[in-house]
Image (cartoon, rainbow, N blue to C red):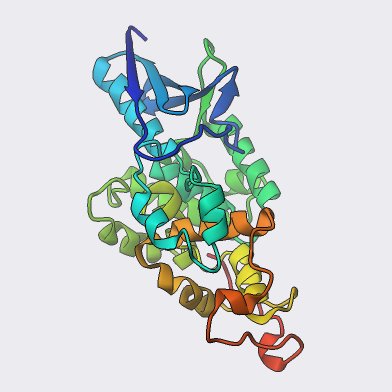
Length: 320
């Protein structure tokens, strides 16, 4: 790696550098976050540090200056440092449901993968299983099929080409369900062959082609759109966390479950910001920032009474 590049960014909106990723690819080392990426097979080592609230410094080492700049762009996307979230905060800072969290956590961002392929791959592995188990599978895949840099000790995720080249049985041996192994290999083949361009300006053709792969449903594509392509207007409505939260908020029954359609209807009022609103709803719930009464969050609309038939738990839909 002969070229080094340094870029200093002034965030347009309050920003705080977060920790590393659960899969171990983005690592905290001292004051910086570091990540190994590859561009057309060439390694790119990227690091980011935030010495002051209004200064975020990205650095990259690569074989060429364009590769280094590419790596910085990908990490800028992943961290959301360039996102100007003022329109969202102006519209929803007084929202009866998430307003308290919006005011308390202006620096909150949607966590993204540097490359959309990683978000797509992770979404397939996370279908219908516990998050911790999915992360363990992802770490095994990285160790078995990813790339390691001996100089830094960092690893990069398996490429679509690498995943498409292995037998589904090998993926299943990493604890991935056989149907998920087939789905992952098929989407990897679509991306590796260039039939799906995950970085295309118009993502709709790629989403439609991926949707035709057995085992890929709305939840998987919404995870890709939100966490891999930066579309704040997409929300993974089939996520069990949202099904539980919306069920509890709209009924007052802590054991209630909403349907996927009810989750979509619940977030519809957030318009182009559904995905970010979902992150704030999670944050509000985890930090005890939700309103005490659901009625306060839905002026003029009485919540369904706990214990009634309409508030009984719904069967969980297949989050595929």
